[in-house]
Image: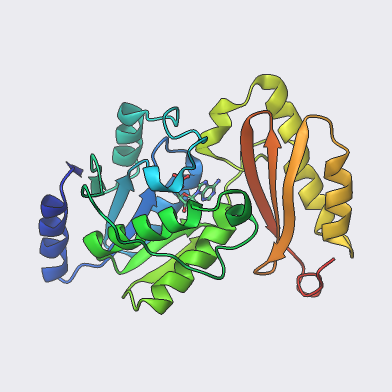
Length: 265
Ligand code: AMP
């Protein structure tokens, strides 16, 4: 497995593979890898000859009060996980932004509301960094988790609108044994907070079976002590939740049965 930090070294390697007729799958991450990330790697390995993983904690997608500085960065562990999962190349740049950079990718419709409501510059940061990474790696396919459902929607739109020649491949959410959606931020949860957080996947699962799933989930989750609901919304045939447990904001969603995904309740 190669580890490179520069765009030049990355492009040289990808170019060599492509000139041999090999296809390239790309998994962008912020590191602190878990089985959710590794599922994306697995999908990439199934569908492409070579797999590139990027590890970069992107400062522009964090708000000023958010956890950029304390975001976990366990590089030695990540490196071993990539190696064990047959990643061909890890791209680990120090910094992706030139000083004085003044160009942004701003998707103006799907970025509004939900996560974009409470985090007004978040999707601008995501769209910009993903566009930069896609331009640098030039993969055939790029893999994203449904865990961040709005992110999938925004990226698909950006790729379509800007004619970026890549196939976006969304991958289903991977959960811990207790049902909690895996996230690098779960390490922030205390034991008690984690117990409380389990109400989110449990109630979400019950909600998707109900006719008035959205209204029911809002009402039920609002009553749970220790959980502060940010939003419940339907999108892309999914019921999506964001909620605070202590100082940690958690996301989750589940596919709705076909008929239920059409109504707004
Ligand atoms: P992150 O490192 O949090 O930026 O995530 C990198 C990629 O992994 C994104 O496409 C996420 O949606 C995806 N991802 C994160 N957690 C999960 C999960 N539990 N299941 C599936 N994909 C995930």
